[in-house]
Length: 281
Image 1 (cartoon, rainbow, N blue to C red):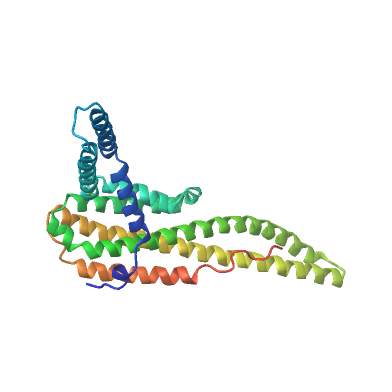
Image 2: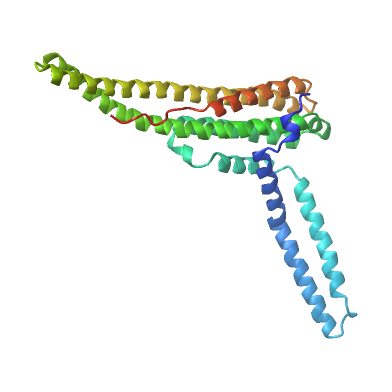
């Protein structure tokens, strides 16, 4: 199986998921109740000692024993995978952020990506230990893929927002360009005609620049759409195998496929979309 990135660098979304799982284990209702019970038991023991009902220095034993029980409960909660799907949904919703809600298309792709990952988490939680072990490294790679999709979605949402703004300005430039071109044909003063033509050339340049920007931004959305579709194709294969309680025989091939997608997206993110703000007319 291909290793590389998945084995050497941490995934941002996976780190957030682990932090959320730890927080849930330490602050869950059951843990809080046990913690309160331990504190109350230690207090009652201390009071009983003061009244001579118990041997001295008994309350530290009660507190220590309760702390052990509390630690065991927290450890069991950390190992429990029943809530993994809900935790992943929460973590990924925060990772994608609220800024994309203004762009329905990007938000739709984000929701698809979240659904794919949460369903994969649910299948992994229900699978046996051997089946889960067979996809350990593959899960690391998928979470790096999720990092890429999050970054690509954010960039695409920003670029599409800027493109819409620039397109609005370009529309005004196009209207003014039509007016000036009609004036050029009827101008009798050569000097005035040259000034009109210079203005027309500037407006035309702005319109062309924004048209090019719109095409590049559309390409960015198509890349996002392709990445989410690739995620869906991979996760569906894994979920099918895990739901049958068997190992994933093609894990190595899937890992290599995802690694290629990651390299492609990282390269495209590095290139970015240039000239987001063409000069105003």
